[in-house]
Figure 1 (cartoon, helix red, strand yellow):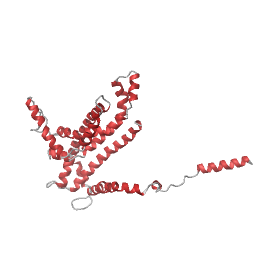
Figure 2 (cartoon, one colour):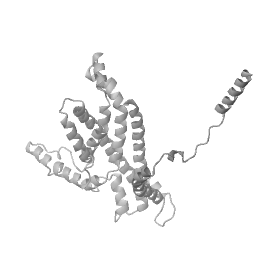
Figure 3 (cartoon, one colour):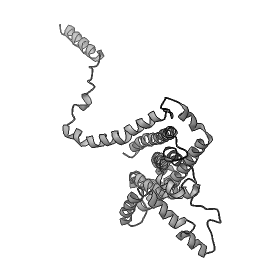
Figure 4 (tube, one colour):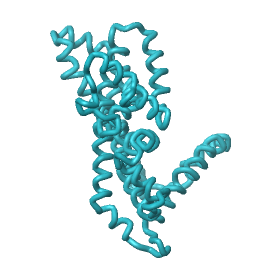
Length: 311
């Protein structure tokens, strides 16, 4: 009797285990949500909708509309012209160069302040300055660099006092390297702000363990420190690339139309008197969105994986 009962119970349990899983309501994820939470996040959702989603949708639609208002692929085809390709190539080169310099110098500064033997009060000063400098761009930044490294700038005049003219040596603030150096002013502080938590995640015990095993400082960073920071460095590099690729105010105020990067070409197509083609401008903006979105996706994916190492 008991054996038959056990068999029946086991059969019933097996049927429950092998049965279909109960259907989950699509609104189950909102079951524990409070109205106060919804009200709190509503301003952010409205802001994202009005200033991110709607403008992006408008640009995507406008990229496929011609002068006569009809649907066309001509704007997308025009992205393959030599002028447009050249502007994208210059923008990519400047973004890569400024991002690489920002990562290298930002990492060195952050390591010196956070893990070095410098005064601890210097860290708060550096983080405060980085928070301000990372958002200092546009016309004020362009004027600052013109007053510093322009033909009549302060640094240029100081070099001339020692018999060295940087402009005769080939430097020009309105050139590729001039704009790249200008971008580094906000790229390096942004790198410091992003990489500081990752450097804090490097435990002192790891350094002590490596030293106990006979490893030098160079060996620790080669085999332990940099491999752990490497995902963060790659992710930050992609973020800095996207940050520089979309910058327009600083480049336009500094170089005008002498350096045809994509944002300046886009501005000329939308607001220009001669090169006025809003459809092509929307296509250029769509191309920029695709490139910056790809760079940001790389950053988010790498950052998510890197956080697992630092927990």
